[in-house]
Length: 199
View 1: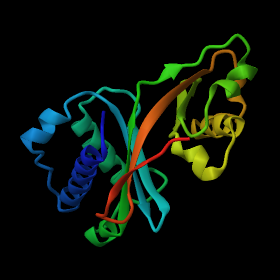
View 2 (view 1 turned 135 degrees about the vertical axis):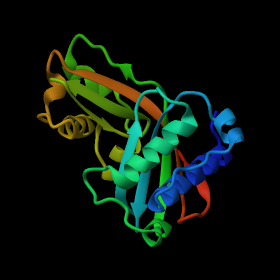
View 3 (view 1 turned 90 degrees about the vertical axis):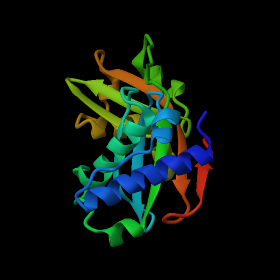
């Protein structure tokens, strides 16, 4: 189980990876970090500036060791999120807070009547993945809490994230998957790391 001390290590790793990249270098990950965080895990890194989203990228499935997935997600959030320009400077990085979400493996929700899906989703606990027509959208568990959504609205926005109609979760061939996440966040740039409680 990941605790706040582990999260601090991983957030520092994420920040260091971005710092090195801004200087055109690769991060040198200590051997003890590679060994301690070698278990595969899905992970998302979220960057916020002044409390507003600045980038969020991650791996939903446990395909890489946790340390490597963290580095990959951090670099993606800083430089590859298509919604934002790449992070430009160390000064900007120094004004950015980090949030890390470590995911359980996604599990498909199966029901006879798709209209019952919202009843199976607990807002604040579950993250969502919607897959249809070769597209997929993912929203983390903390998103509907931050936006004040119910489970139906959460499903609709996950469909929109996939570039699909908001009611595509009702389609026969659409797959809806849930996962849970441990969320840790910095209270200020390079500041205290705390676990965000789920609903």
